[in-house]
Length: 268
Image: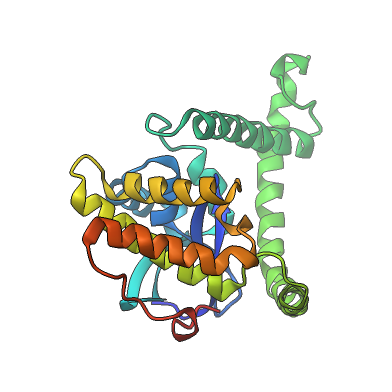
């Protein structure tokens, strides 16, 4: 199990998702949150990811800090997220998300084909632009060349990650000074509060599954503060947002939501 250096809640498809950086600098996204965003069953997608020889190398399990203590969660490397999303079922997604997934899939397919065509000195899609079928023989050599370049790229990534980490540290420090959006600790703490609220809703409404409950709670929060994405809630509204979630939790359960303050969660 890999060690985590930092974590932050960001939005994918307008749904809050937990992202982490591990010791080598690589970034991963919580598979559970991505499944919630699209309307997928977590267990089925984990089995699918682990069966895939390419995608499985980007699946890791990491202990993350939650109000209930350290818990193991499954994450997918950010570089593999678009390819995985381009192949998932869109049947349970909202119309907006389903349309985005459709275009993502078409974009991924065209991008891969155009990369081969460019390397083979062939015109990009559509294929009717190729005048001589014999020219297709150049694609095999092109695929070999792309594979070799990918190997060289992977060798150079360590240096790029080190430089990026230094820049990211400076940018994050400036963002904290300027203010505006919620800080990392605030995003993380509110994220955990909303998950607790969603659990309470699910327990009191048999028609809701975990993903539906979390989507509904985050949607209510975004409507209340008139934002498209969870991480756009302004820092000035953080205290109000925490109080709002606590009230909603109490309405469902009849008890106060007892979670430690964000400073105790080690979310940065």
